[in-house]
Length: 320
Ligand SMILES: Cc1cc2nc3c(=O)[nH]c(=O)nc-3n(C[C@H](O)[C@H](O)[C@H](O)COP(=O)(O)O)c2cc1C
Image 1 (tube, rainbow, N blue to C red):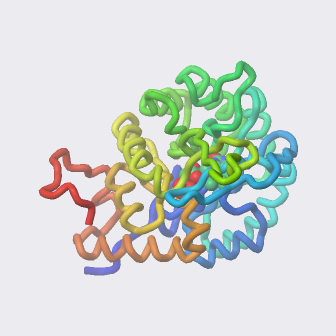
Image 2 (image 1 turned 30 degrees about the vertical axis):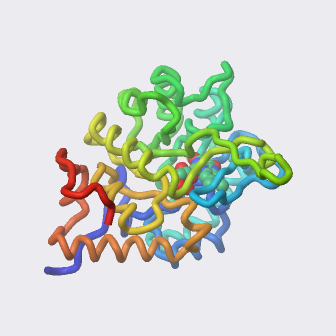
Image 3 (image 1 turned 45 degrees about the horizontal axis):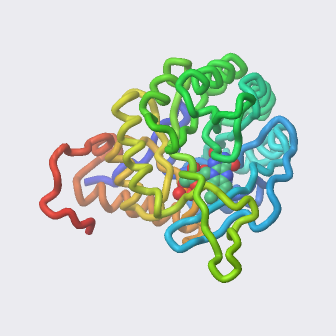
C-alpha cells in the first residue's frame, strides 16, 4: 500500500497532518512558531487575546500535580492589536512551512466578541477560534458564555457577523450537555467546533504549608487526567453535529490518544499540556504513530476510521 494520507481540510484550509498546537500553551512569536512548525504540527492556535491587554494572575499560575496540570493564568495577553501584529509577522514564516494559523479570541461581553473578531481579522489568520469556555472568565451577567445554548449561540452569531474568516467555537466539558451547546452554535453559524477546554475548576493543595499550589487557588485541569472525558465529549459532539469539522483536544500525548479522538469523531487533534512533558517532538511522534496505525489497518485516509466507534464492548476491558 502507498503511504497513508494524513492531510485534512478544516473549513477549506488544508492541514498537512491533523495535529494542532492548542491555545495558550506557547505564546506567539515568530521564533516559537517556527520551532513548532519544524517540529511537525499541522496548525497552530495562538494564545487567546481580548480587547485590551491583560496582566493575568501572579505566579505561580501553572503546576504539574502528577496526572495532569492545573492552571489559572488569568488570560494574560497583550491585547488584540498586538496579537494581530504578531500574527502578521509570523504568518509568512508559517506559510512557507505550510502551517495554518488559528487566532484564538475571548471577550467579556457578547458585543466585545464581535469587536475582537473584527480587529483580529485584519491580520488574516486562516481561522478564528472563539474561546467561550475559559473557566476563569465570566460574562456580563456572571455566567460563563458556554453555560447555556442561548448565550453560546449569541456569541457565535455576533462573531459571524463581524468577520468573513471561518470560525471555530471552543466548548467546555463543564456544562451538562455539550451536544446541545454544539448544536446551538452550529445553528448560529459556527463553521467548526473544538473541544475541550480545561475541566474544573479544580484545586490542588500543598499539604505541608496547607496552601493552594497556584496563586488563584483554583484552576482548570488538563492533561492525561481529562483525556477520557475529552473523548466522550468529542463522541457526543460528533453525533450531534456530524457534518461539522471537529478538533478534539484534551490529554492528547501519544498517537494512541489521537487515534481515539479520531475514532470518536475528531478531524484534527489539539495538543497542549503534553508539550510541557514531552517537548515539541510530540507532534512528529503522534503523526508517525497515526501513519503506522493506518498502514497496519489498511486505512488510506483519516476518514476511513473517523467517527467509527463500534457499539460493542471489547473482549477485554483492558487498554493495551
Ligand atoms: C497553561 C494553559 C493555558 C491555556 N490557555 C488557553 C487559552 O488562552 N485559550 C484557550 O482557549 N485555551 C487555553 N488553554 C486550554 C488548552 O488549549 C486545552 O484546551 C486544554 O489544556 C486541554 O488540552 P490538553 O490536555 O492537551 O492541555 C490553556 C491550557 C493551559 C494548560
